Length: 363
Ligand SMILES: O=C(O)CCC(=O)C(=O)O
Ligand SMILES: [Fe+2]
Image 1: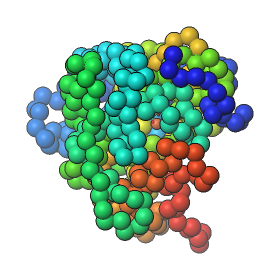
Image 2: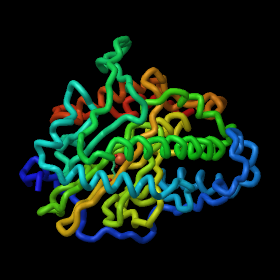
Image 3: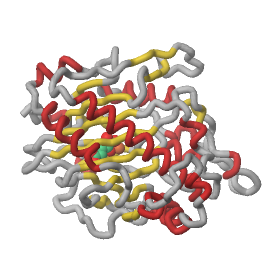
Image 4: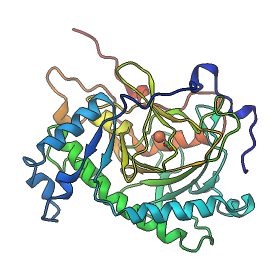
């Protein structure tokens, strides 16, 4: 096994997973068939069919509000895309460490293989392979305000397994298409035109991550990923049948396990949607519990706008009696600052959208 347990993985007591985490009363499951059934495959079909989709849109809105998370069944994404991806991921992670490290992610290139990520300064019990869905991906050179220099990065592909790159690229294409549909539903659910948010994604800096969580000898002390919120706009997650994703339920703050459903996707809104929606929707904390019996694979697609996007509450959702709750911030700089803190243990807290929250005076 590649990872060796040591004190770097130990969570503070308050953040360790309880021995039993309930799957009951979990995140809503939404059936996407009404959208998949739309016969016309043109670009405006969601806006044009919004009456027929009203029930679905209401379900999406209610899930975003109450949970920030939902699970999608009958999604219309060809299942072979994920099957092929998980097959090559399994082969890749089974390679000797020296082989995987040939495509290592480092400070000079944030794309590739990595096994020492930290979340909130504690090491995660996982190994990952990151790739961008569009190349080159552009990231500001530093997190300094006003930074104009942009670095360009290319994916690093391993030689083995030979089908690895193709499986990754085809899966990424499928996810981009799916993400645009979900974004349209979310736009409608906020009372906006279906394409209102699409304009932010003409270019994008979306990433995919292959996560491998090996069997862990100390599953009560460590986490596969420590508690965190996703910083981007939307995350579309595929997981295998092992289970381990825990979501913090908004109603009572309890951690609940997301029950694996075959051929489904888990969607969560990230910090950017929280800010655009002016807190109508919340980016919710989640984490990954590990176990000593079976290793687990998952694949998040992080749907992100391009680095130059300045994020602020949408004007349609603010105004008289609804003041904007956030100052504008630059997404690329936010991303860069986050990335710095994942590489090493830092003494300061990493950047959060709450740092841009305005102090609103009650009147
Ligand atoms: O593996 C999972 O279920 C979730 C991973 C996750 O939250 C992340 O990579 O941001
Ligand atoms: Fe996450």
